[in-house]
Image 1 (cartoon, one colour):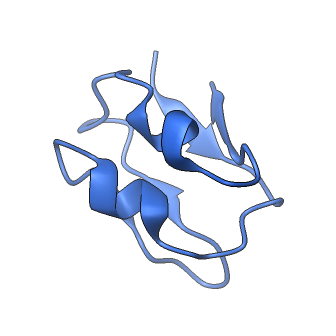
Image 2 (image 1 turned 30 degrees about the vertical axis):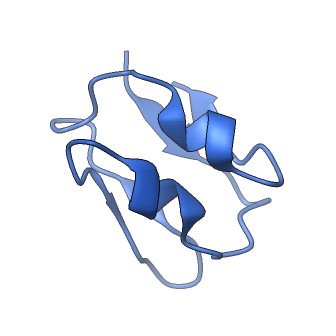
Length: 56
């Protein structure tokens, strides 16, 4: 199951830097995760300072 980023995102970009499949992109105003590319590894959540990524 893919992760999604909730409204607590502060758009720091740490999640995108750590994503091994480049599933995370900068959105307006928060980052978004492409569910088709997400492999549910959890690195985005591990590196997020505000725990914005959540399991969908």
